[in-house]
Length: 124
Image (cartoon, rainbow, N blue to C red; front, top):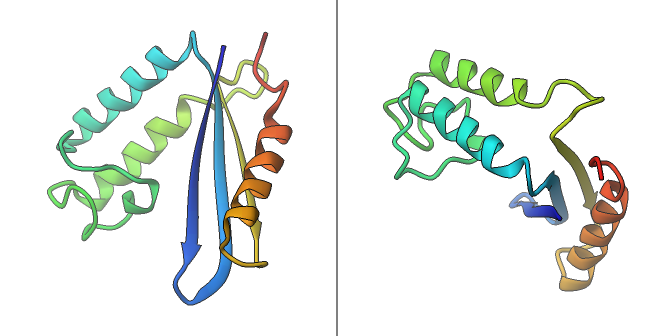
């Protein structure tokens, strides 16, 4: 079984912009990846009760404010290192965007495109 994670983003300055990030993970590899990310967050001093998002990683004012930028940089390196070998990659990513408006139709179209691009990328 494959797990497909979808997250959308928009731009306040450009209301017509919509982006979709997709991550595809083999379900058998998910527990190890999740534990590795949680371990990295804990090692950096991130309060696990505080939300973590990628856009917070280099900002001292977002997320867990006790974690200094130097620790955030190491945290980013640790998380990226979980998936550096393309041949044996455990996570596959795709980003699609549109400037055609932030509508349900645009969102579903972007999700379809991202999912189609990711099909077949994880080992069977």
